[in-house]
Image 1 (cartoon, helix red, strand yellow):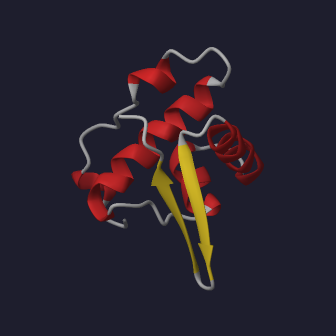
Image 2 (cartoon, rainbow, N blue to C red):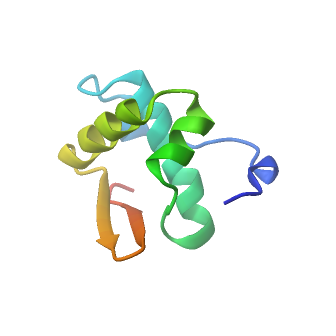
Image 3 (tube, one colour):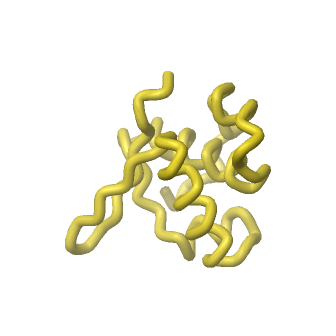
Amino acid sequence: MDNLTNLKYVEVPMIVLLDDGISSTSKLLMGLITTLTMQEGFCFASNKRLSNLMKVSKRTITSCITSLRRKNYIKVENEPNMRKIYLANIF
């Protein structure tokens, strides 16, 4: 996760890109989550880390994650010391 310089791009699933019901920021966050998920099978980045990467507030990240969850694009599991974000079965 800390070595993001090796990442060349983010990949936004087409179903998310074409969804008029979510913000552009949510779409970009979905691309980042998708790319980070490809490394470990899930994304474990905190809202703070995601907000720093995207140059938006933690509140914006929280709102975007909620939006993506409601649309069933992602699933979030909260474990004692780690949150895991998984891609929903949209591919």
